[in-house]
Length: 205
Picture (cartoon, helix red, strand yellow):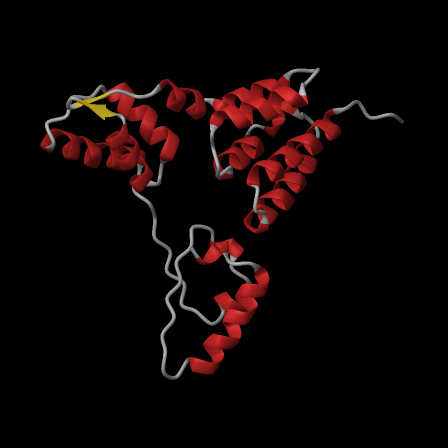
């Protein structure tokens, strides 16, 4: 999880690597290579691992469930995969917690949180977007990592901020970058949504 190191920590690590490179090998893993500073990247050999597709993950998890003789509905399994992809560990943990008497039953809270992104975008499309409602949607989702939301806000900007997509991209880029250095990521995404609401307001000439 090297991408969770602060910029200052990464700069310090760069000096450590330079000092001990003759006797030590450093291996770092991360989910977002863009969060690693360029001076540190230049001192490493970067290997990118492509995650398996949702179809491949579904096949793998189905095999596990069949071996464990666990009954499951494909729609229920799809809900879990869509929510946590590509984090297979989270999928398996969720399945384990949701299995009772050898049957996979998804908790209603999982269904609610998996749909929170659509709820956020729908509220942003409302001409009179309610910021308090947006905050409540985020809070009810129980989500702690908002990378998927950032991407969806960028991909669907034309639906809720037509003509201001560039401004949305700037806001998302800034907040997504700084989210790595924020203790409370919910406050960071709430700030991003507040700024998006500001640019949605009619421009006075």
